[in-house]
Image 1 (cartoon, each protein chain N blue to C red):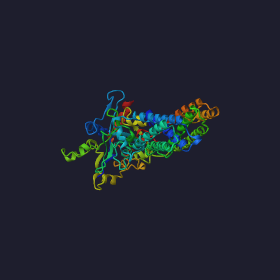
Image 2 (image 1 turned 180 degrees about the horizontal axis):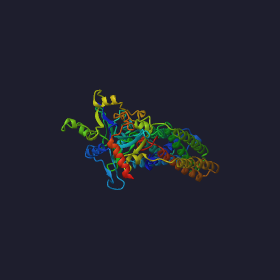
Image 3 (image 1 turned 60 degrees about the vertical axis):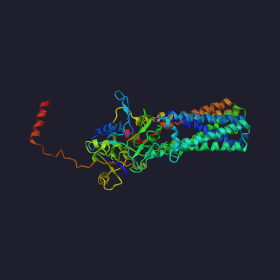
Image 4 (image 1 turned 30 degrees about the vertical axis):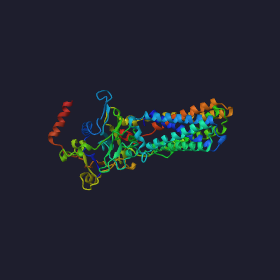
Length: 230
Length: 312
């Protein structure tokens, strides 16, 4: 098995709900807590497994805002594991999930240097490295209904921009989505072979606005607006 | 990269210490310049051990959870950091044994002593290589991901070691024409190799904001990084140095690590002045300290592409 996420950049609305749900679940999960520093002060900071950036692609008027959630990519060539001197970082052979054994980590930061995606953050209070667990304490929990055995970020996403599944299974939803929508990996040139894939925004035909005939009521409204403005 | 003093001191002092031990072994093995007398050998090995220990202790200050530091010796099969730890610890018994041997026998060039010294020196050289590889293996930082990094670590460890050795020899009343010449040759090697390194990292290469986001055919610009204040990522990797400031620091580095040591070593040989050699040693180690600081500040991690940089 090769578990991972697919992020749909076409539908992501950038609401940060995935990051909040992640923080809520994991702050009492296996690598808990996700410490906050100065949360109500002028300079709030803290440990998050999920961060969302916002980019502008292209130039006006052909530009587009793309919201960009990032978490651990659970790479096949996980250099963070290779460089770890203590054996705290490991990649599970059965499902490819990369984890940090909190009882072994000495907090040297070396794994975070090796990660190109910024997936690892040091918790200054526990002195250990923390990262996305792919909600390992949810996805294998036989006590909850099967449809809920998914990472918290995937369950909470209101735009269904996140998918969870097995990339080794060619017919899984994630494999099909990557195949059909041209899913890609970030910074492939570094050869980390990340499991998580990103679906590019769909290309839509532009909606013509100038050539449309305007309705009479719209024309009236425009005229009224002009008059009132004067 | 955040220039953490603990990590800078690790490679700076232990590099000099290992270089010194390797040169003590070489000089005594080959009887260069008549070899070192017992007192000179004792002081040199002691200084080497002191420098290595300062480096090792300061590196533990970098750990957020030092309770688990002992585990860092376990993953030597894959991690250069673990290998460095293992080899550095192996260095100690041989260096201490040589120290004890010289103290009790007064025969630093006896075969058994030389075997110990050579083993310690060899392990020191291997440790310098491991230290260089800690940085050189990271594909995420193009300024580090080059074979020139361990090469530079060697040049600087040996150059500072040779300067220390020349100082010890002169302070304890010996002629050090050859040792000072060796130090000067190594310092010139440092200047050349560091120049090649700066030329190499000056050329743009590696990932860009386009490959980081997958949008390869249009302009990409960060609108918002999603947090109001810094994170671990911006604090650890966000450092950068304006070009003029970097140039200024490099000038300071070259003056301290190359120009002053060369001049003072020349004076030291001419006047057999141990004071001039001391100035050279202090200058070379502070110059390499500046170099190590630059090495960290100039390293641009690719995660910065997710915080607004167009390229690293």
